[in-house]
Picture 1 (cartoon, rainbow, N blue to C red):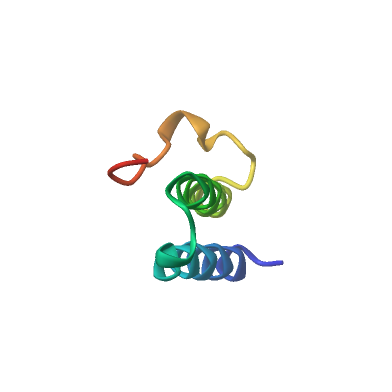
Picture 2 (cartoon, helix red, strand yellow; picture 1 turned 90 degrees about the vertical axis):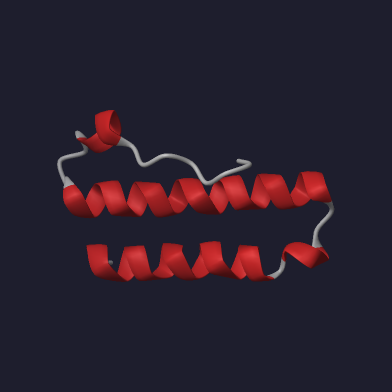
Length: 65
């Protein structure tokens, strides 16, 4: 899977969780959102640094995460 496709998929997954927040209990939503956010950040990091050295410059988590 290319980096662009990985980022697109991770973004789609994150937005899907966000749009369906009303279907989750608060704790389940927080966990689902955190997992989706982590996958998105990993996809971005892998695209920027395919060697895997990007962990030092992680993006901040969304508010409330």
